[in-house]
Image (tube, rainbow, N blue to C red; front, side, top):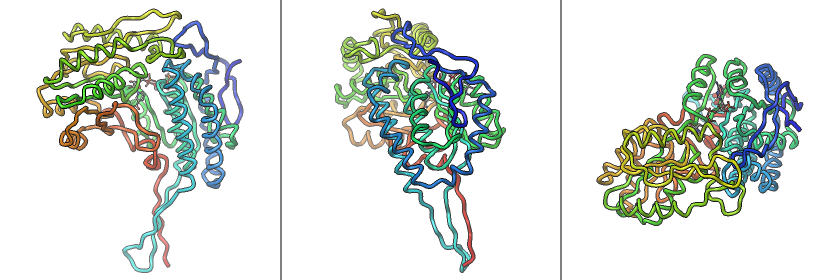
Length: 477
Ligand code: NDP
């Protein structure tokens, strides 16, 4: 059965369909999904525009109830939805279920935020005049998401968009439509009026582009690559629309001489290799001071030997496959580039064979890397990390900040002085001390600086900044 697009409250088949393939077993077809056309995207945008006046004035209890019901169903079905996610994306079942729970928590959080909408009342500078400051919805929000978090990223964009009274046109990555289809189905059945949320699965170059080109989309929130982010930005400037971008990272993880070695290795292995390194918050630059360098590299090697890389759904798997062939080629190209550049391939780097045909790659660690190498400057987006040796903390901080990106930054140290200094001086949106660079809770701001992000933060109460517009209203008393 082909899973359809949702346009103006109707499930629409369209003229084409595409297959969702399991990267752990390419013989396994997860499902078939309707491929929207540019015309479908325009119909979805028109439906969202028509639905906006009523939804933007809907009662907070209606919005609360729909978001709450959605959260409850996602959480009740976490094992089934987590399995679907792992099957289509390739992260382990534990990671898939964890991500699904996070999506449920996000809907639950924003169900609460509907009830907490507040403004400000201030005295004017002039006597007998009052000023009210309120937040209003923006209009039609376009949501474009990547493949690496198929349920959490759609959740953290859709939930606040609806909570604050916007209507939505949502385009998930074509590689992983299953989880997105499932949450749209849940929201639809939870009672959203027609046209409030529209799903258009299909190609970015067709459906996404039709969204960028439409004057009737008032805001676009995008997560994905830097290249597509730039297109979103340029088109948004053209249409004078609000936009928010979350793009790549080249996140540093600093290990100081005084680090607890076990804590440092656990955090580094998690940062670099879990979720197959396919997280924008993954750390691919391990910046290590010389006093601990050799012990750290040896301990990483020992730890990496024990990692279980296999089918994402198998019990005991710690690292699943790469998401598809093209990403696998990108990873192996960078491994070749690292060797050509003179970094030492210390561990891993081999393609692996498992019981089923899939995109299995051994986690890979380079040593003797410099921060000038391409493997240290460009996002690889796979289980590939390099160790950069530095003299001391001061040099480590300079190297950590010497990157076009600025999403997440981590340090392993037992020194309060260095931890405090690093939190203050790391040029990143998120900083972790003795913890992996990835792993931000559902209720706190997520986002970065420099080439990693543009616009206000996602998640938590900070999301209101993007999904609302402020109004200042005066009344003569
Ligand atoms: P892409 O930028 O290729 O895709 C992201 C989304 O944009 C997809 O839905 C894609 O559609 C769509 N898209 C592609 N072309 C266009 C277009 N011309 N107009 C509108 N939309 C378009 O990135 P990936 O999904 O391949 O994700 C990997 C990259 O994203 C990595 O570089 C990673 O760092 C970054 N990323 C950043 C995150 C962050 O929070 N900072 C989080 C996750 C990933 P389709 O794929 O269906 O063609």
